[in-house]
Image 1 (spheres, helix red, strand yellow):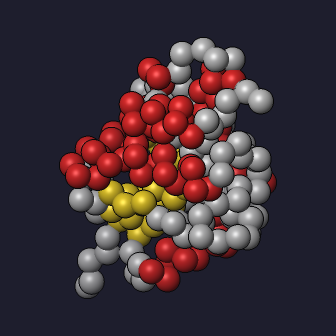
Image 2 (cartoon, helix red, strand yellow):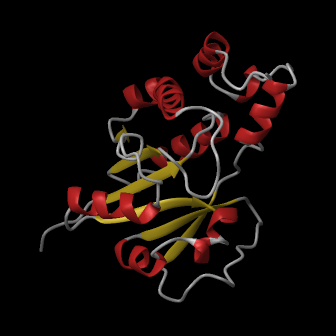
Length: 200
């Protein structure tokens, strides 16, 4: 029998990537449950508008993960969605990575809040056939799965995630308040040098 690899797919708008994202990525990598973890910045997210351009968001992801990538060879950044002008849907990325990794076990990393709304995803039945979901929950949190179709295979992992959101970071920047403690130093420097998220 051919051994299959377990590959984690971690998509998001990363607008901007912050220390909470890094914490989850490092926790997943240190768990050694995946042979590869691919971070996928969304190009044109269909569910939400993005404040920073795809090029800026990709640059910030690359800056944030530089040290982590030198520590973990299994960590990769994908430009698949960034390079695609179409609206970014998970099923398109999953199709792509399924073709790129035939026979391997694909696991989609997702936060508990997003997982509770998975019934809103396009082609969710198709997605369910191609990947398993690993839902990130906080310690003691009850997973809301009432709207999750029976066909979706999922497990959950408790991570004492940092209480940070990209929205919080953007709001601090717009208000000209300190935000450096919420993002990697290189990302903070990039945001300041490029004038991203600054109030008009």
